[in-house]
Image (cartoon, rainbow, N blue to C red; front, side):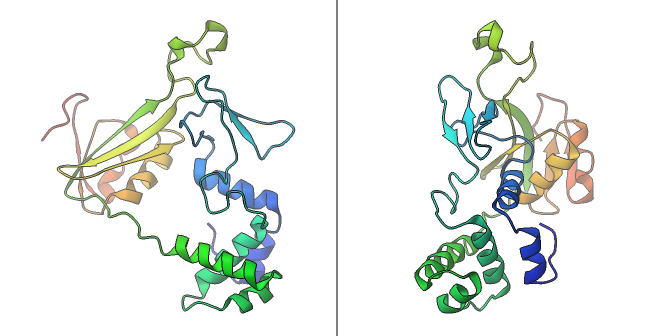
Length: 230
């Protein structure tokens, strides 16, 4: 998110429901919406209601919006007020009363208490520990096989089709982290890695060009595909 000078600057930027929703979509999916039920990127936006998507996978067919699985799901409170409340609470680290928040948002004290409680929970969730030591990273496609679809419904001949690109990192003798990314390039891969791998870690990857700048933050070792062992 861009840096805002003050609350007026923030309000001017997120002044409509559409702007808030578009921001959530980019933050959650980038340029490639993915079904929260099966992970497939084979989804379509409804022409009559651009807030709703439908999964095209035969075994899923779920309908969803960007708020599914978030604190905004099924809320009747406008996203503009959710966003503004989040901004206010994030810049008041010592907290404010629900009565104060209600006055700033133009809502009831009960609604302000609900917002305060849910947002505080979200802001205080402990981030997962970063992977460290020796970490191996690789990427793969996930989703239904194009070969299993009727010829008339295949999106491409060969290749990945509408499968989701997933980046995975595993700590030697430790935990695993995965994330759906839009594309295997430096602009998507490097930020994703930095989210769950500690600086100065020994990184082991293949020779894909997306990993070329890892040496700036990590001890980077490349291996030939199929021989990721040290």
